[in-house]
Image: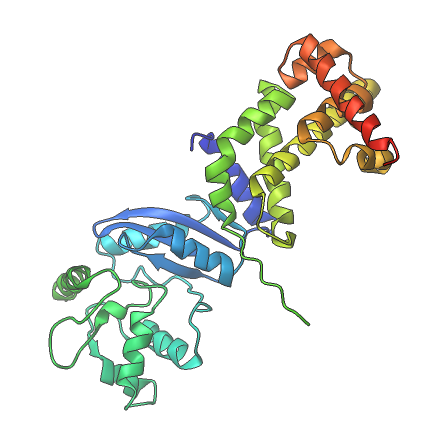
Length: 193
Length: 158
């Protein structure tokens, strides 16, 4: 597409200001590849890894949230900055609002909420521990599903949940990315006083 | 009650697929200086109406139509400003005036409709119509007369 960037920027900004946008998306270059970030009025709805097709992710947003989807780096500047700061080593930076409406069950939402608020950078929990914290100690498998289908990885830190038997377990961005993120945060916690 | 589920693609995918050709279309209708304003306005109008669409067919043609209408509205507003020397205090929705005309020309192609509006709503001469449509004066005359012939043919009882 060769439309002038100024025209597209202005279009997206007016759309957001007038409440015409169901969601806004942006692409962000990071050490783990180019991420797709989709945000609604309440917070971040979706983060997509390079291995996931943008078209499919945005089509799902169109269907579940609304089709009025626009692109804007500027409108998502705060979220872009927070994610960039995270990758640059600022471990407190991922405290940005999320919107978990794409998560289809109350239990999964509760699991992801607990994970986001209670498991900080450098911490690692097992699926079973997280299940216990949500109040269902036998629901490790269901917690695993909640993590596997987490629509906002990184901000809801499902990379910090690992199997009890060892290894890093599976990850939407691939196990190698999960290992890199944990190493990145390990260095962060090692640097702490 | 039957719940109708229309699966509309993300709006931005339409902008990405058709934005370039819509800008060319806007240039043809509004000239280089106004084309980007017209397109931006047209895409905002389209965005406003988008969730109310009842099906996801012919979205490209729909965007062309919205762009054409927007270009014509811009043009009419311009003409009114030129006539009175200032912007109208109350913006009058042109459709109030043009209902009969619009209903009459609705069966025609977007191109034929544009030619007729420029000639009869905006009251431009063929030189100006040709400039607006980006074609020769001869072609502008032909488009208008062909559109009129089509209309007359449709008015005959069948």
